[in-house]
Length: 428
Image 1 (cartoon, one colour):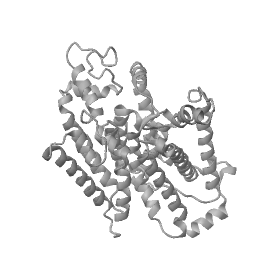
Image 2: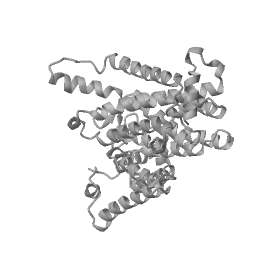
Image 3: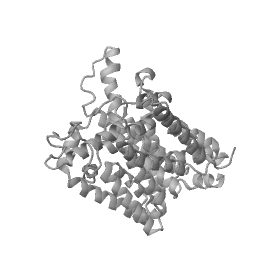
Image 4: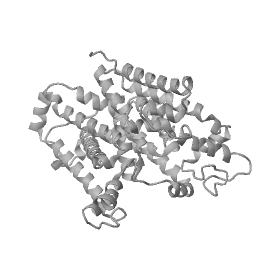
């Protein structure tokens, strides 16, 4: 079927899975963990584990006489709180652990609706392909735990849908949503990658977002230090640049008789990732100079969502280790990836290749995080492929932005080969 019903396919599938979970939990009274096992996922108690940590802490520490949960934490039943202070406002309005399920519904239902919205308008096969990522263990984990990354995903997705270059109100509302995202979880600051379009609204939105983020972070430096101190950093069920070095040091090197003690905490990982990104950017410049423009993003919501998703993945990857549920931000890239895969003809050959490589990398990364030792940590390799591929796409689009907005700023050696570009345009 070619009719554009991909969003409907995703919505129906989500509805069916939700119905199964609700029937198992309420009609069969199987309980939280057993209900999730029906769909093959290992649930954990208490229900909505991550969100429960927030609501319990916010509710308990809001009572008169209790201390700030970052210091002492005697009022905090979880003895650890590593979320931005804005989440403590829940306790000020009377929300406690007993409201966790309701709050989870208020967060997760809009996220699922937005997911169907951004995937609409494509063939049914695109919707079926989407389900492979939507129901991946990484994405399901975020919803089973009620993780606050979902709230961040909502505001970032809504900002992408709202943003328009030539519509001031929509650009302002998009900026406001991204600012809220920074307050919720900091990750939205990486949406400043919108700047690479080199257009007035995009550059102003990105600049103001960075300025707001800097001011916000400076205002809570003491809290940031405490959050950093209690945030776990683990190579398990995670992604990030240090992990592959940790596995080499702890797991694979001893197996072959090598001693790489101290590798993970040495400067070597930072040097390697810097060289890797530099190489990806240099390769992108070479491709662009040849006159080819694979991976060029449209200026619509699909292109904006891709920029936001790519920016958050790359930015979080470079920050260190992140639990695998954060890969849900790759779902923002999915509509554009599917569009590239759907391109036909000679002109779409490079785009199809890019689409399939990114889709396969997302698939492996989001599915194989839970038992990486059984697959020789191939998921970590695909994380690096994603980093390189997304870096190249962002670089190509940045070069396009500069060449269109201010061609005189482009050094002569970086300008594309005109005959090759004309031939590429003729193919299109």
